[in-house]
Image (tube, rainbow, N blue to C red; front, side):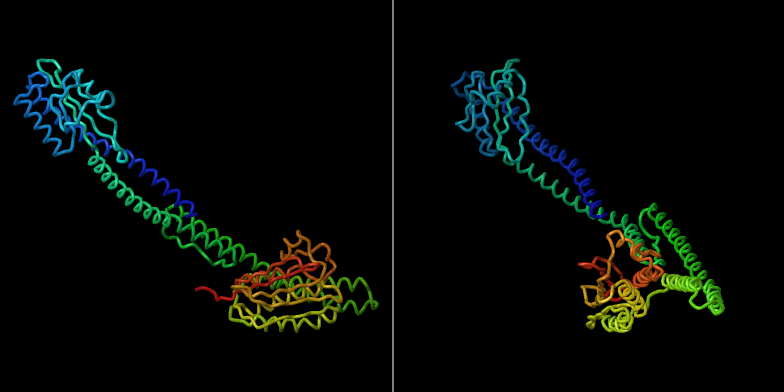
Length: 463
């Protein structure tokens, strides 16, 4: 969630900073140019004040005209700005440098024409750092209410563009610093907001994995998430209570029913002595009674499995599996099934009793459904962070729909209802393995049969 939320916050903050920075950069450029224009207006006004006292006709010289020329030349030498005073017919009164002339068209001519109308030229267009335009300012020289000449300045913009660029760099550095601060704040904010969510997700995963005692620590984060954490803990407490009551009920019911059922089976045995030998009804009742007793035993085992914590220790999975294969070999031989074990030494963290019970259920199931003269193979191997025990048989196997249900409580394939069993063995195995961080999965075995994979972790439990 953080990888999705953080880019969104960064994009929003970048948009806000751009929305503030771009107008600020434009205003900085406009202010720098306006300062230059104001300076040129002052300069042209000063030159116009000198020029209005020059009364000689064009082409003649006098002291005031010489003074004006000296001022313009000094102005050009110091600032590098072309400046000139031009009569109405565009002939120069004085100018610097000597090569400065009024063009017949363009920005300079347009400014000259506006000044002839007794108004200052319009402000030039904004000059940006990447442009090399010049700034032209013209002011009229007025004598006795008439415009007799025009002062024109044509300024380079190099220094102004440098100042604009420097201002932009300062703004950019500020934007970058603000962005870094905003990213840091976003990291802290998202961490603060999402920390309870991560804890809640980890606790939920722990509970689904069988650690029903796991709870969320109600600390940090927004008030809404803290309330959610408290509500989650209350829900988990209620669920644990319900499951505990269910387990207690199943265990108590199974235990309480075993004694009456054992007494009933004993009376049936005694009744059988009074009836003719081979009576089918008595045999059927005895078989159903034994099946019911097995179901009660399995229910009690399941209730205990859901309540018992795994006693994990480093275990030689190969040696343990080899023992279980040896224990089931006589049963397989009696049925005409070959039971083969490939069990190299392989260590893992497991509860030996739990793993033995799970392997017994899986091997029993494989031998039970494998036809005569077929093979059941048990293989032990390591697979990265887990050790695996793979049991494959050549029985009828299961369909895709049946694979999704195998291991459910009391579920049995409709094609094998005549085979002895309560439908709880694999469910008990799955529960026992999950308590120790293990798992059991089922898949097809080509060309026919079933592959059961038991996995247990190779690394110890984290504390």
